[in-house]
Length: 239
Image 1 (cartoon, rainbow, N blue to C red):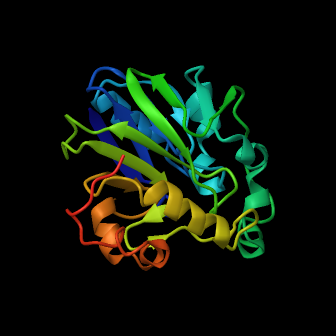
Image 2 (cartoon, rainbow, N blue to C red; image 1 turned 90 degrees about the vertical axis):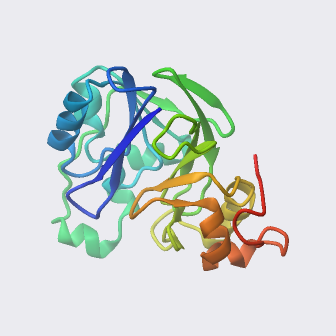
Image 3 (tube, rainbow, N blue to C red; image 1 turned 120 degrees about the vertical axis):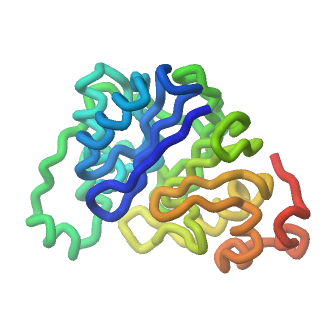
């Protein structure tokens, strides 16, 4: 397992590449604003060939470079069907202030080849077994991607690319179009809390964390946790 990532030029959005090993095919997760050159350098450095782009949701800062990344290689972009409208027109998911900041016009192109993600499905891409968890709240189509983590630099049982569902110490905002705090709390309870404590979380923004660390300290997880689920890290296993 090989995982590498870097923050995009805008909004600090994390773009990740995941492969079975250097020199193999890979998936690209959330190619945001201004990532193309740096992504090409990373791919060349590790001799990686993208096989697909995975999108945790349809917000502009996560999908801005999806068309050039996919189009240059003739590969498919995967997104949950509830965020297809955002992928077609990301301006529908941003605040009025941000739209004004961008001048009301977005230099964005929708990818040519788009496939839909299914909750609970396990996909085989680039030799990786990737499980999709639909976790709405930040957007209607927000998802997390889970992969076996053995052999990664963290040698964890599982890795979770959480998008803007879960951050270190926080969660994604729910006040943008399509967001819902009740839906987010349900996602945290039903999709995040059941994960094992040693699951390594690679979020859409900010540093990596673990489910155990967040279970014990993240106020949003503590809000929805039962007394048993809120036990200290290391005391609980999950799926």
